Length: 99
Image (cartoon, rainbow, N blue to C red; front, top):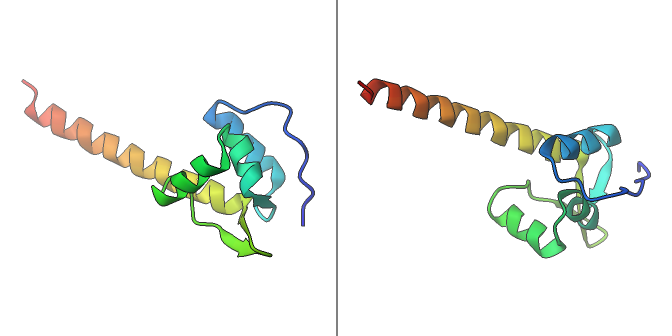
């Protein structure tokens, strides 16, 4: 298991969050508390984000919620890709109906 270093501050910008997770490496196992800290939220907010599909579901290890950094990054990238496609479709629709 990769040793997790302390994050000096709450990361506010998405690119900072992504960079932090990338630095850990895709196989690094992260805890619910770590995810909450990186996103600047509490554990309850992390659980709610999972329910809304904003974060991938965790796996249980020794009774605690865990992810790999790679699983979180893959999930975020897939959501960003979907959002980009939706924006492109919206732009096409608007341009078709614009004079």
